[in-house]
Image (tube, rainbow, N blue to C red; front, side, top):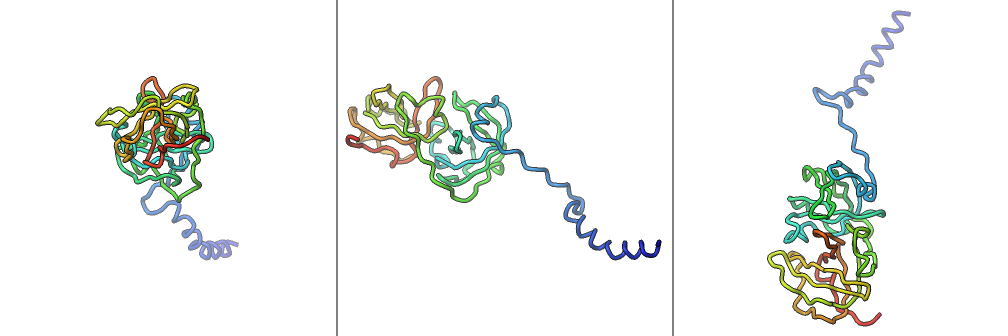
Length: 229
């Protein structure tokens, strides 16, 4: 019986070594499990200072709002909500690309953001489905839409004025109440042709600065003069 046991051990020893080696390695630690992913809506309900992991589709290019935000971050949205990812390094995120983010929830002048500790905490994946902007009334841009991609149609009630070096600001109203629109320098949007009274369609990131909510368009395609519906 003892001989049989020894023979079995000799036969199976190489197999056992192969099975154990990838787990233990040579002087290496076992890899830590990935953090649990939650929805962006769940993350938005947690206290500032909480570390979260979220996934979604990129809605704004890296650094599109750098002149006013002071960073090279981007918008992220899933089926439940949206949020701004604040980074000082350009990770070259662009709209519709999938991303997985681990970071700490922070308040930036009223805007809820998630701040990765390192650029490596941003995992960019393949291109996903386009995020369609949500059509809202101008007065409907607020806490409920913050972090999302939104679209409004209304008349310019305040023509563009300079707020350089940060950008330009104007107001649009569809009759429900005005919403500020902030045009960052990096977007390349030419505001020279925008006049008071024009009916425009504006798409952009639903943002907040201080006590007021605003729309931040991403590119020249996000502002267009339109006719009647």
